[in-house]
Amino acid sequence: MNDNNGLAVSILRQTPHETNFLKLGRIRTWSDPAWCGHCKKAKPEFTAAADQLKDELKVAYIAVDCTDDKSKEMCSTYGVTGYPMLKYFVYGKDPVPYSGGREEIDFVRFMMLLVNPDAAPPLPEPVVEDFFAELDGGENVLQLTDSTFDDVINKEESVLVMFYAPWCGHCKMMKPAFSEAATLLKEAETPGVLAAVDATANKALAAKYEIRGYPLLKYFKNGEANDYVSGRSTENIVDFMNNPSEAATPIPPTPEPKWSDVPSAVNHLTQANFKSFTETNRYVLTMFYAPWCGHCKAAKPAFQDAAEVLKDEEGMELAAVDCTVERDLCSDFEVQGFPTFKLFTEGSPTEYQGGRTKSDFYNFMQSLKSGAGDQPKEEL
Figure 1 (cartoon, rainbow, N blue to C red):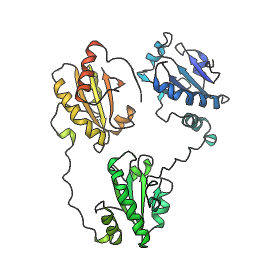
Figure 2 (cartoon, one colour):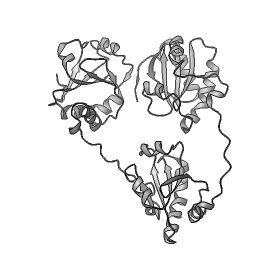
Figure 3 (cartoon, rainbow, N blue to C red):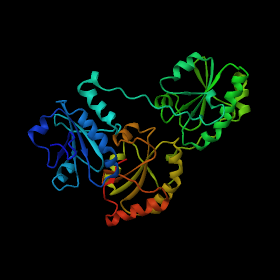
Figure 4 (cartoon, rainbow, N blue to C red):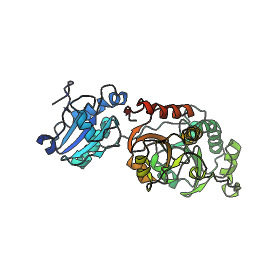
């Protein structure tokens, strides 16, 4: 059955025991309540992908409205707890969660890679936003990407690279000095160049060089990476590029203690104890985090304070998982950004989309007593 827009998305309203459903090849199922904002945003992309592949005999795109009484049993059977939730079926076997992108090309490429890899459309080249474009001399900073980085690093004898995030305040503050230094070095015909990489868009480079904060500068000499050990002023950068081997080694900062080593009422969970802890406590609000994440650091004090207030409330716990250590655990729950908060109700997860103040966390947990907090939330 096609949807009312005439596109090739099938609408299911009953538990899918029908033979034709089970005999379909590869199936992408979409749980779609009418009120869900994220569902409405992705729906045109999903339907466009379905229309594009409507002649592929082994592919079907299916939508399920979980608020429809006829569909509730199905949604419960397949563990739908947030919206939209996408699952991938192969010949009716146990579904696999889909955690890819939500644009037309993402949906099409995912299915075609499975049924006909040679026909799968390539991902579009990322749009390179020039972070320095509005500055005088900004053109003297080379904007690099995953695909251009190695060519420049191997071609140039001396390269100072600034890894940044477009939203980062410290990165924006450093831009004028970095741009001015690039211009001065070019005018003086000093060997070497300054370059920049958007670490949020070029994730392969960010992972390779372990970029965990912004801005982070690395110096490349004949293709080999070294830590940048000087200051961030124009003068510091120019002096360093003129004499990189003479730069002083800074005194290493005092290492920050692990959160799990700091006494608090927050329960720090691992793969070994996560399942038993979340299933034996009725409500567990869990913060999935990375130690280097600025937003995580900002949320920690309020989260700890709320945990302290709630520590005597039976069955109500606040917990944290370090995703740089518990990678498999975070992958199991499709954690794609930090911090991610999930409420586990006797082991069953739903997204937490409330605020991040002490009052927000506390009031949310208190609301669960009356059932007000048990409603499914939109999944980001």
